[in-house]
Image (cartoon, rainbow, N blue to C red; front, side, top):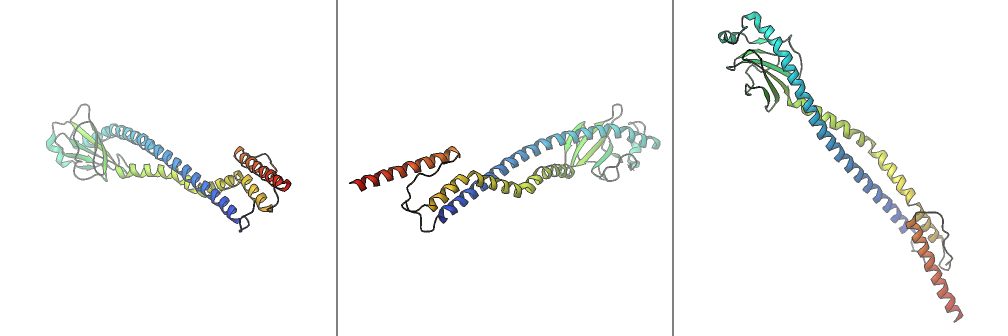
Length: 250
């Protein structure tokens, strides 16, 4: 059998194309799976982080309630029935709590603001005065009621802070993969080239032969798929040899 006029270069291009195609396919598949795993991990991390942050808001509200009463008491507001004094007592509780992302407000049952942290809005947050969580466009709010007095404390965390924490987690899940992507592509390409090496040797052997060389191709230990190709080719060469011998005798 003759070789193509390009001396086997077309087969070499096909080999390189197959290797490149395998590399691209494997890289895309691995990255796709990694991204799905990262998305699932990010979703789980978001749920876990939200639960932990909510728990922190609850603990903070209980802790700040006692501090708030301590700040309000010196001003003569020790009992919830003395509501007439409360409008005068909008204090800044700077010493009570410091957090760039969390604020608190202490309000009366009627909604009058009694005490607030430094960065808290000057107006009470628009959430129900009942114990539990509420969501505002910019805040995740937990409301806690004093056990004995009709005083409420709103402890709120910026939603942007939570989003930033989730994005930070996602970044550290995805960034290592992005950094490793060139190395991964090189590794996969090397592996695919080695896996296709028997095919390359087969192509070189066929390129080396002349049109009159119908001797069997030497077989070496190789993957089963390439063994089938070599065996089938040798079988075809043997049949061609037998046919030429018959013609020569005739």
